[in-house]
Length: 114
Length: 113
Image (cartoon, rainbow over all chains, first blue to last red; front, side, top):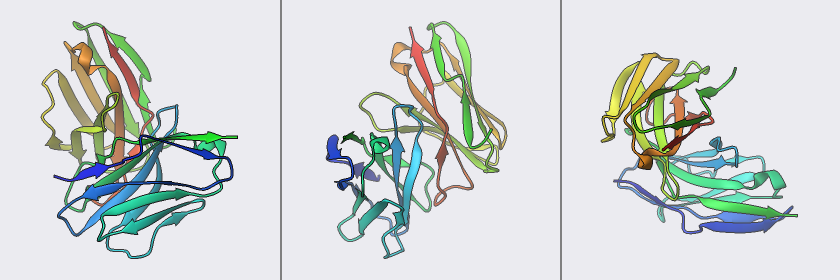
């Protein structure tokens, strides 16, 4: 079974600063996909970024980027120029090419202070 | 409407009630999912449908009964629930299974009294 671990229950960052959220996962598969989702107080789960394991290049989406270390099974999310609207729960998730379910971590609550 | 919608957004029911949650996706996807999100627990997959066929039933109690009449609609029928079933129920859809990105609806917050 695959497991996803987010070791930081809460993180805080000042507006305009950079923050990195950690995620590690355990799998025996070689072909899989990793995601970061954001869940603001509205509870809508919103896709932030996606990474294919076969790609060596780290995914980026505007102010969001990942540091994907396949050998270490690590998948951290970096948020640059943090904004108040970035405050939310952030979930790391895994899915294999042959799977159905997204396997989620327990989440990291990000607080953004002015 | 765009994306994935869910109704109702909030639901309070007694343990003897029967109610249904509705999910509709406007993305032209072929797979739909129900997830349960309880406090302090990771999201749990409940059911997966692909092209209206159920492909996964993740050991969910029979008091939860899914229905997928077509690829755009997914229902979760609820009966004789327990207080521990109180949670946020999230619907998602994707183009296919496996590698495809899943897109979520806003959820139904359920309280069982």
